[in-house]
Image 1 (cartoon, rainbow, N blue to C red):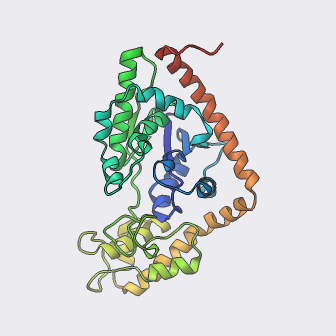
Image 2: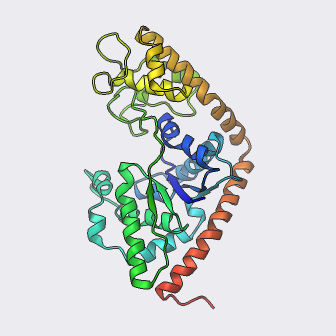
Image 3: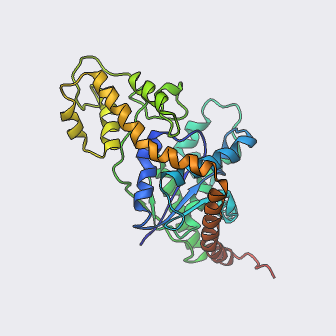
Length: 329
């Protein structure tokens, strides 16, 4: 079993794209590998936020992950800030990283564009991300194209540390994630579904009630013409609906395309709405149970933090010794 790590920020309510694109694959692989799943609340602090809302969002995100099927007995689920070695390793890696390579990070440029003031944390968060990965002797990191640059930085920092101080850190490899449904915004089908979309009408929250889900899908933007076919370039709206229907009914896109080829857009939208409501029903029911029993969530996160820190403490001890830090008497 390979050591695998993935993280998710507690910013915004999690939506259907998060579930179909990542979370359901976390659930499916928690028995195949030694999986560490982290709610990265420290990363959420790099942009302006409300202090009272952060803890609530972190708990809600962890609860969603448990409701989706992550099992503390089969994986390590924890909150980033519950393991203090993350910040300690970040400082040590900061002394190995250089400003030039951080300046080249594409996501920093995108997230800082147009802001009058940018926190040092936003500039430095790729180093924190590297610490997240390297702290657990992670062997494989599932990354999409948007995070590949950050993984390369983690690999560079691990290699540079090892070159300077001896073989200490595991150099992780990128893992190609399972093919995921690419869920697009219902109102802007050429853009990915996101909690930062201009309007909420294009997003399906995992905890949205059935009537809201149905209304948003029935109001989804479609395309000119009346034919139902999968053609993301010419018919992005219909193609998005077909992909959602395929993913939530666990069938190939070609199968649902053939089934609804002679149906109108209204019939397709209703079928998608019914499928999404049914798909989310077990998650929503389990979430309601966990929300009303916070001690279960607390116990799961405590177990995860204990398991994570047991690994992290050994790695940070190696790093401290290699880097020449005086052991505490």
